[in-house]
Length: 510
Image (cartoon, rainbow, N blue to C red; front, top):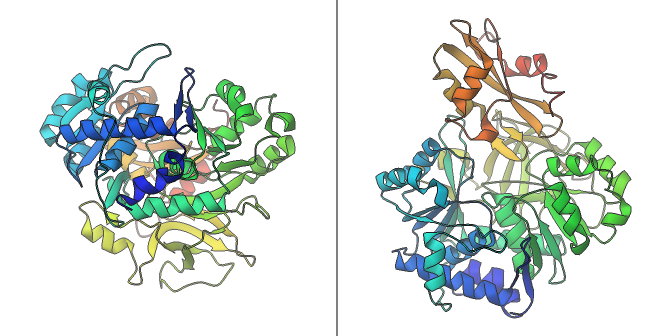
């Protein structure tokens, strides 16, 4: 293939150009033929802006069909797609742009004025991508360039080990790391998921996930595309919209929060889901209680799987066979997974808890401009150290039991406590802080900041100060004050004590 990822993802669809690709809430429909034309227009626009093979294209825009076409256009032009969470603040964007040095930064038209100086400082050109409202027109400089460009494009040749995307994932030291994903990383995982989850051109995926991270962009979109399936492409998860379009779908991918919200609606029943063949859940642990409740109401067993930004998908409960609540199934075809002792690094027998390590074509090639960090995260035999803790039971099912890096997963988003702690510690009057994740009835986990202050402080004052420093999903849902943080004999903060102490603080949160 000339360009393994682009050619591989669209081979089935482009062979049937009149087949449906996307159904949009404003009434429009996209065919695979439209995808070929739109991706060519964006590729031409990017090349005209100076994008060359290997150049990064950073994108922080709302979910839209054009944003998805920009992803494909970037890959087609040989560029490296770098999606950024729409909640990131200008100060966070500044770090990403200065670190990745993208040729082009694409943002929402309303944010251009505030981000132009940041892009200029990073040496990046800035373009805007507008989202078409129902019955209206797209408004954005890149939209205009694409619409004026040719619908034909000679796809740029790339090799399987060339970069296709960089996704930033928070670091335990507060510095985000750019996970480098190759053409083969993404294509091989899409091929495996298509076959393992039985996706075909007859499927219609209800797409309600964001497309700035692995789950929505690569797991959902890539898997549907490589199968030649159609997508109902909604801007976000909305219960009313889900029930409206559910009758047209055959599959849905989501995070646990989606399923708890559907369960809270009396309309969820067996009749409304009878035509569905697959519900999957990931990005955060799905409570066994939620799994059982969903099956009781619908007769459908949610398929839970496990992956990371750095590894794409590594395990999955079976499509045929027992989907065991509380587990993430078995290693996917081509993926090797082992449990090792955290101290000795020796493999552990089944049933014992240790660090999860994985190896396979799905695993990223390293962190952007961090060779030492990359080397530290891989074993000599090529296994990637996930930092997650788990076990393999006698039947081979993998269970995630904890996160060695103190990762908090709230509503499907990864949050590293250290980053929030650094922001808290910079605030006037804060002596030190510790951040933990505690149970949240809707998001699975919620962020709680525990602060030692040098003078009386107001919780609202601190939460307000963090609004300009951290993306909303990272901001503490509560900040509590203590005289001192609990520590062990080595001086390390005992976060387990804090989690236990404040375990119920968010139990009544809406």
